[in-house]
Amino acid sequence: MADHFNRLFGPHPNVNELLVVTNNFSRYPLIEIVNSTGVKHLTPVLDRYFNDYGLPEKKRCYNGPPFN
Image (cartoon, rainbow, N blue to C red; front, top):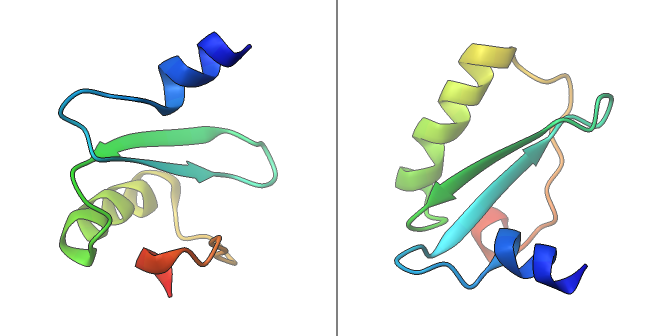
């Protein structure tokens, strides 16, 4: 199990972060490799997700530093 976890969550060469967005109803994950969790990197990714799947009724985050 730890081997699978390390393959998904790191370490990843030349990659700073993984953005994971899930639908709480279906539990379907969307995973995007991003160079930073700053707004200029996340906004285009979230815009694309919202355009593809529609706007969520509610948004929730884990309140880590990039989302405070």
